[in-house]
Length: 350
Ligand code: PEP
Ligand code: MN
Image (cartoon, rainbow, N blue to C red):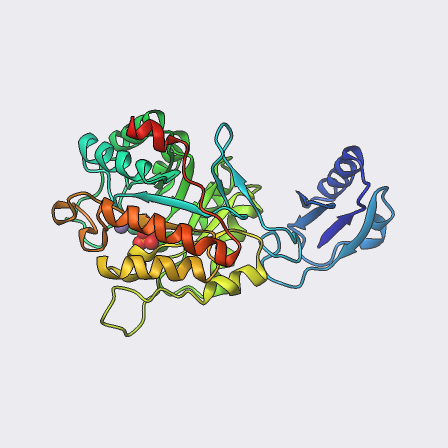
């Protein structure tokens, strides 16, 4: 159920409606929009008695939301969600494209700083790097853990890059939430519902990668899990799905972008690195992702990919990243976007 407040409804009226809903034993989710506030109601088994709510002061109407995902749905919030990072001009969602770049894994302070400096110089506003790695083999490099989180915190201070890194379980979730700006939930955890619920209790944006065989509805329900716990800052990411193709690691399903945007107000990024698994395919698919309307790109960059401890074959060189930024800058206006270059460009060069 969704309570649509009148345009002129006051904060006190909104609060009173939320309190009324909570007192009925449900959860109220106030969702401010450009024109009016809507209040999502979750936790109700059947329909809420709408008459009593409609009678409350400031309420315009009460609507039944038929979709299984409610808070993630455009029915509940028409405007695109824009995630902001206080103290910076970086955003995810909205007109400006977000570019997140960095190695698959943080391997050492030198490796991470060297890559961070180069991606910052090309204008990236966000730095990625795995501290806790979900690896197919238990014998593969599992990440540096807390040490990697410390290195990334230093990278944020040095280059002004916002940090995004993955939490693989509830233990790492607490640490990642403490150190990073965005918490990534990986493809293999997209349906780890207890982890999603815990991420919903955080007050940090959560980036959810699409599961290897997840449908659009399952993808949006993963976002709903996080939002149902009160964290509305969710970012979706298409990273390729399993198909029969043998020319790429995964098949990057760009057609999910308009589908997500039709149904949801949440931002959606494209990961052409995991989406293809091949360095030579990353730039073309990054261009295609932006052309298809993605809100940004998350890409793996390494200055010595042949020595990388994970995903070297799909990591692009810093020079290729610079080219990618120039190309995306040109494509962006064609699709009504722009590519902000970080103000750290000068700092990084100095
Ligand atoms: C990653 O970003 O390095 C990663 C492991 O991603 P995914 O969960 O999409 O495989
Ligand atoms: Mn990777």
